[in-house]
Length: 229
Length: 242
Image (cartoon, rainbow over all chains, first blue to last red; front, side, top):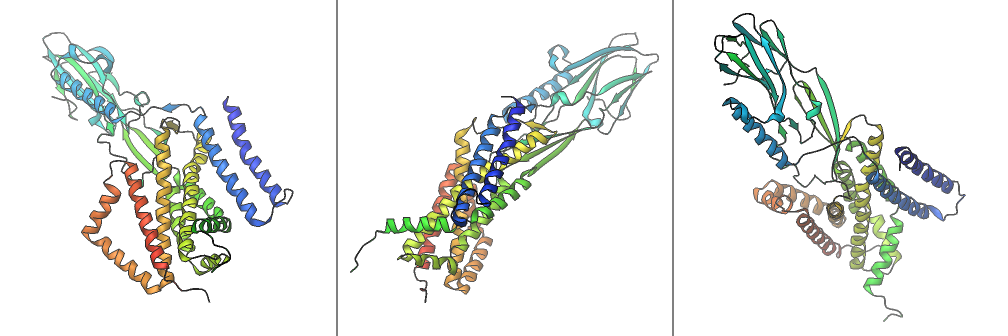
């Protein structure tokens, strides 16, 4: 059944109930006193709510954001930790390629490379430098981002990547433009007497990692402490 | 010696039938409180955080708000039917205190069943409204069809909790009818008990340390029965209408 028909039918329920009540009150339908009216209201109210519940359950609801279980979140967290450990050990071949977002090269004009960050949360980005034996000025860079998950919501695609921009010999990392997303969740649980929020982990706060292969003669200026050792 | 004898069961049934009709006007209070519950249900629990300059807000709408409002009504109704005006309705029958108490207990259970089921489904009105009017995205969640047993258990829990709340109102009303000082004395003793460590521990064992909702429901059911039995014992010595 299409959405339009669903809306039409749902809209029709209160109209029908309204007509019935008006008919009742204007005595077009026979009733004996207020007790009978109460009984009718009890029946109509009950039927209305059950009907609404059934309609909601069969209603196609999209788009729906998937919510991960605690075990899945724990798995993402572990993958993030393993990735970071391998990156710090510079075991590039063992790095999960699903975290790789972009790669580029840049030719420096001098012997100094400056790292900069534009945004509020520089902690969200880390730079890992791998020194290479080379006399060239070429810098190789790879941008990775580990899993991000908040409240179990699978919204990684909605969170934009940091942008790495070269301006001369300075690598500037730009934080994404401010955005706000609000999600609605319905719970059928009675939480008043139950401690339902027993999840030990509710968020996986992944980071953006920039892996740079830098010739040893290049000096790195890092005023914000973006490097990770 | 009487010309006709009537059994306790048929007497209770007649009283239940009478009381259900007589108190049917309570439906309007229930509807008003459930509407209030629906209004408060939207974003009953909200969480917010941000990462990479992106703010994420999660609004969770639950049945808790509706349940709290209806619980207040349950206490109020439990108390109301012990008042003199309502007790005098019992004199429409040749009845005993025992039959009257059992009938009240059953009537409150029937009301709790109706209130529990309707409170559970009342939030669906808000859900349908939000589904068609909210610009926010929705998070998947288990539906009744996905987990019918859990939904039935939640409805059962709501019914039993409401019944227990009505029993609290009932015993408070019974004590008040017996003697005002008795009511206030009991209230003071309960408040003092609540402040002691032992009582807090007992409350934790009953209401918090439960491995499943079913165990909590069973305990609550037992407490409600105990309260009704105590109320019956107390009210057996109430004075008669003159």
